[in-house]
Every structure is written in C-alpha cells, then in structure tokens.
Image (cartoon, rainbow, N blue to C red):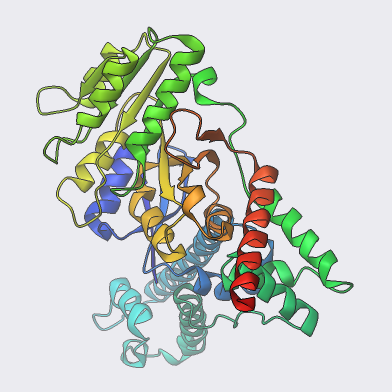
Amino acid sequence: MKVKRFFAQSMAEALKQVSEQMGPDAVILSNRRVDGGVEIVTALDYDENMARQRLGDKAESAINGSRLAEMQADQHRRLEDELNRSRDRIREVREKRAKAGATYSGATFADLNEAASSGFDESVAASAPNARGYSDELAQMRAEISSLKDMMSGRSAEPAKPVSNALQQRLAERLQEFGLSSDLAGSLSRRHKGGRLEDGWKQSLKMLATGVRTSRQEWPDEGGVYALVGPTGSGKTTTIGKLAARYVLRHGADSLALVTTDRYRVAAHEQLFVFGRILNVPVRVVDESHSLDDILDELSGRHLVLIDTAGLTSSDKGYQEQLAELARSHHNIRTHLVVSATSQPRIMKSVWHCYKMANLAGCVMTKIDEALTLGESLGFVMETGLPVAYYTDGQKIPEDLHHAEAIPLVRLAVERLKRLQQQQSVAEGA
C-alpha cells in the first residue's frame, strides 16, 4: 500500500493533486484543515484487513472503516514525521563533519536520502577519510530509517488477532450469517468475553446499532443542496422523485428545484423531467452552456435543490469531470452515495472507493425489500462511517422512502434474518 500526503490551499486543489499523482483508484484516508489550507492523506491499494493488521491491538477501538482510516492516516503522519527527524539528524552529522574539515568525497545529502530509501550503501560513509568515528552513528540511523520505512510499508505489522474461544467463534459465525464481514464479525465477537451466546448476540447488535450513524434531520425540513451519486441502476433518480414528492406534499412546489448533471447518456434526464412535470417543479440540466454553479446561483432562492448525477465508474468518460464539478463548487453541496442493498459487500466497498473523492456526507440505502439479509448494508455503513439519511423498500412514491434510524434498521435486519431462517427450515422440511 502506498500512502501519501498532499497539501493545498483549497480542497479542490488538493483533490486535483491526488487525481494527477495517484490516479482514480486513490483512497482518501483523511482530510483536515491545516495552517495555510488543507491536508489530504491518500492511499493506493488500500486494504482494510491489512490496515487492521498494521494497527494491531489499536484497531479494536475502530468501530467503523472511517475511524480505521483516520487511525491509519495518523500512524502514517507520525512515522513520516519521525522519518523526517531521522533525515534531519543525518543532515546534522553531515554539517558536523563539514565543520570538522572532513569531506564526503562527493557524497551529498541527496545521496544519503537515496541510500536511506533504497537500502543504505556503506560505501557512502566508508569512502570518506576518517569516517570511522561516524560509522556507528550512521549505522544506527540507517537501522532507524529502515525500521521506520518498514513500518510505513507494513512489513513489520503484527498479524490480526484471531477469535480466541468457542463462544466467540459461534458468535462470529452467527454475525456472519447475519450478513457482516468476517473481520467485523470477529471484532464484535471478541468484545464478548464470557457468558451466554444470546447475551453476546444482543450485545453485538447493540454495538452495531451504536456504530451505524444516521442523519438527525430530514432534508425537506433542513433545506439546502443535495447531490446523489452512485452507479447506474442504484436508484438515484427514483429516490430523488420520492424525495421531491415528499417535499411537495409537505411544503409545496414553489421552493423546490431539480438539477441533473447527466449529460453523458442519450435521454438520460427524461425520467427526471417526468417527475418535474408531475410535481410542477423546475428541472435544470448542467451542460456546456450552463455550469453547475451558474444553475445553483440561479436557484439560490429555493429552499431545497436535489441534484441527480450520471452513474459513472472510474473507467467512464466524464467520471473525474463530474466529481470535480461537485467538489469545486462554491455552494455547500452535501453529496450522498446511493447504494443498493442487493449489492455484494465487495461491490459496495468498490462503489464507495469510486465516489469517495466527492466528499461524501452520507448515503442512501435502496432496494431494502429485495435483499435477503441486511447485515451486509449495516456492516458497510458501520465500516465506512457514512451516515444513513434514508432507505427505500419499494417503488411507491413517496410511501417507500423512510428516514433512517439505527435501532429500527438493526431490528429490521434481525427480522429479515429470522424470516430467511424460517424459509430455509420449511424448504429443508419439504
């Protein structure tokens, strides 16, 4: 895994640097305000399991993927700072030798840096006369830098903690049947130190409900600009139709507007125009003549603006353009990822990585009614730390749109598991 820090005066500039230097597959571990601008820590080939192994026991306190990524970024910052301090010590040794009248026979600080990066070359130090007095110190720094670089690359990481006893093993298996990943199931089961299996099951469900974040206020009441992103077929446009219908029923159509950025597919925005005509709500299209910010400036008097986007992947033309358009807008656009509950966990994670650069504020879970189990969806939002704003469980507009709450979602997932187990029992009996 390759981890790198970027500094820029604005988030848009930092994202541009990430895109240019790391490519579309970069995963953002953390972003924060610093003196003079923003700092982004990114990674290539990010593996959450590997991250937990590198953090060792500390990873147990990371109840979701977002917290884990922050801890990974913090560890990288500390190691990088320590590495810089070691390089400063090399500079001090070099200056000390220079003051003593010694020379390095052409070896420069850049040579030492290069040596530290690729494996220290003893000839750099040994080539200088009277170098023996400094060889021990340089060797010590060599070992220190090599150790730090090993830690940053993960080569010295401790293996992940296995499930320790039979009770925890049974609990982990039950949580996996619920739909959680093996890593999350193992992490939750290890917190149950003893007692009955049923007690551990209830404790794990409580922890899951605690780890699932939700939005406190509904969008129609709060107002603002919201954009839905996600792959084709995830339900973005239908969800916007449900949100718009709910808003019109509560507040009327005068303070609502719909926008689409999907200019990449033929007739891509026809469904949104149908919703607009039915609800008597204006629909605007972002194109070469009308930028997103120009349209949002024009709609600044509207209480709620909902933005539909194209379902693009990182390999599609216009993917970077669409995400950059959302990220660099001077309007406060709260971008939410739309994820289908029928998707495989790996697909959910892939979609999250694909759209993470859009500064996601949360997510919307769709097609809850079509999923056999809901543990996969709950595990996904717990591991990524994305707050769930809404979930949908049918095609009816707007009845099948629901404001998300953690405890009812976990309860719904338990009921879905019981129903599946009953169906399996009936099938086995038949």
